[in-house]
Figure 1 (cartoon, rainbow, N blue to C red):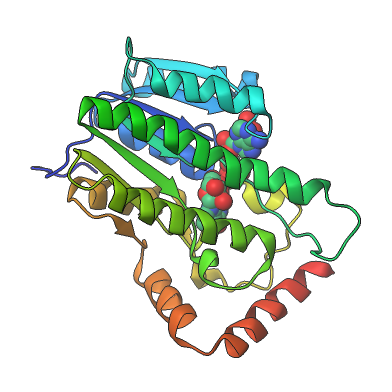
Figure 2: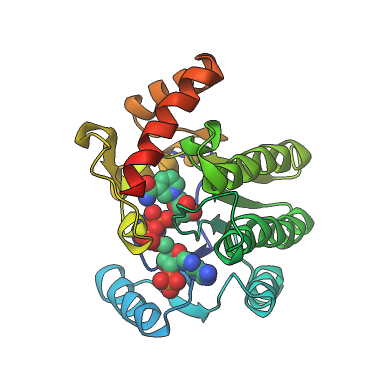
Length: 266
Ligand SMILES: NC(=O)c1ccc[n+]([C@@H]2O[C@H](COP(=O)([O-])OP(=O)(O)OC[C@H]3O[C@@H](n4cnc5c(N)ncnc54)[C@H](OP(=O)(O)O)[C@@H]3O)[C@@H](O)[C@H]2O)c1
């Protein structure tokens, strides 16, 4: 799973938000294989402890845990402080935590909308600022942000937030060019994780061949990052989906996404 002579080796200590499940856990395992120390961030303390034990046992990794709710200002501040630490610097930041969302946009029930903005909009931008500033100062580091192919289509607030972090991450990459900080925008499509079930999102209307495993998606991301890539869409099927989303008329894309969304209302 590791490249033999990487252009941008991934080493040192990696902080992963959402490192206890799905895509984040696959990053934790992939980085542990490369010999990285880990800082796992999540809300569920019991799961953080269990995941840390697994990673220590299976990979001999040095693992810290940091319980933080990224929907809350205190949680984001605690993680930003860890990213800024000069005593135990973070060399790889995986800006990944998130959740599914299927919620009306025209509604008086705005709690789920503002929560999603906090977790998948504000938190990645604030944490990326902290990591970017600390890494720029040291002249080295890698920041990987999990956006999504869904950020290329009009499919509710979730896709709008993925569009935000995609554009933000690409912009951060341009801003940090020449500083020694490597910024990677990661664009998966549908990945088998707990996300959809946890958020009560029906996926039965999405054909099985469109899904890939978290391990596969993350392997392509880590190998691509090591090779110096800055924009990674894992698998041919997601590359095709991304190309279609950007080149087919928006009315056609909208009709397809509306159909997927409608299937989720039942
Ligand atoms: N699965 C897909 O099809 C897919 C496709 C494209 C992009 N993505 C993106 O990939 C990222 C990871 O999702 P996943 O599919 O791996 O989901 P997952 O299996 O449900 O894992 C989500 C992780 O995020 C953490 N998390 C969620 N809300 C949090 C909060 N408020 N504060 C702190 N941590 C929080 C969870 O930890 P706790 O349980 O401890 O809160 C968990 O470790 C997300 O940004 C998602 O949007 C997913």
